[in-house]
Image (tube, rainbow, N blue to C red):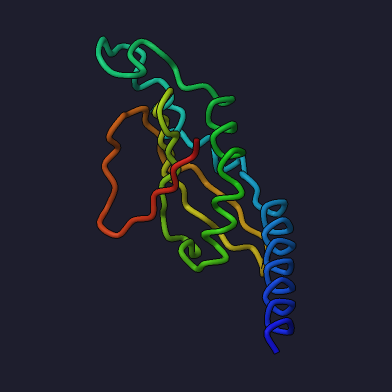
Length: 139
């Protein structure tokens, strides 16, 4: 009986890993939505600052895409755990270093297909989140 439970548990874990992998590969960033004027303006918000982790810098498209790409497995896990839902904003934050924070609007396009729209972004060490808002930290 114990061996049977162990085998069932391993099969469930394998099934979950396969689903996470499939889900991760079906999460996309729609660049038609991504380059809204607000996001473009926010990429340059720190250019004229003299204080802070991004003072004098512009947040590049590469930085944004890299953070999203690095977060996909974490995002997939949160979708599976029902912590990310259609149109419910969440935050992706880089731990240390660049302190990049992205506010994301997830769009469920089907059972295992999601699109992520970047609503806004900021480079800030202690990014303020809303009450009960999910924040995913990416190393």
